[in-house]
Image (cartoon, rainbow, N blue to C red; front, side, top):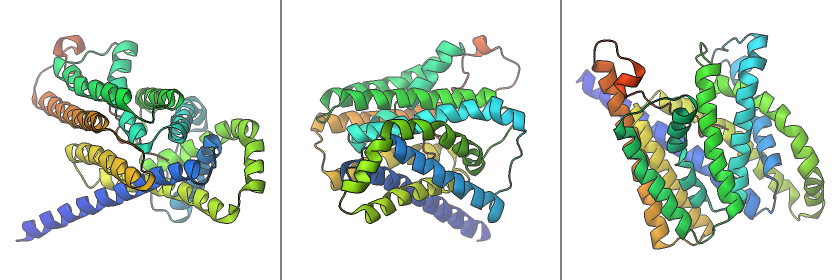
Length: 339
């Protein structure tokens, strides 16, 4: 009886964790799109900078004031040698995501982000010469095919937004690969990650934001009709972006890897549906099919990766990397939503 109650409590906790993760993630995406489209605030660098500032303040309060998470101490030298390069790529990743949101619909952007597993595998194969067994490569086929179909049939296609989203996938994959080498020995959680990287990202982005968008932001402040409510929305999006990091930490510790993978892909479907209901961007039948194929492919990839991981753990005896051919690709799923 006790086991049954504990099982029910665990299930309820996992469901609540997933729902609040979905809520924060979808809300942040929709608010960012609203800022660019409805508020006519066409400054993705500035929006990203606001998010980084809010996240820096939020992480400091969470760790230093509220002490919700213990601070992971990092030597000053390691901050510049290890965390700064990560922060630079991290900054590029977030900025490109916001740039793509300015030019293409949420549905298309979210589908392209699902291409990240493929770019991660390909980069590891090209850069690190990692070898993966055929099941990993086969699981990427529906992802690539779905992205191609979605891109070809996208009614609101914009080349600049498409390229920004694709390069953003590469930046996410690069960040994952760098994290494996640069952050070796540090077991960062999502809050400590933001605590160290957000201030660096703010420093990196502030100058380009002022130089490239400063005049435009000042002009918008003078010409936009309802500046105060608009600024509240922009700052709120930054606060919610930080809250998203708490939700990621909570959901990771409340679910299994397989559940996380499935929930992540369903989250994309929820974001696509909610964005269509709000912005009413046109979606053709073939475009919806392409999006569905991509999400199914991502779920299949996650299942194959988990299956190979289980088999590798269970199989005894030493094996050489090239001989075993089941070396697992690094996963960026738990990193892609941060900030």
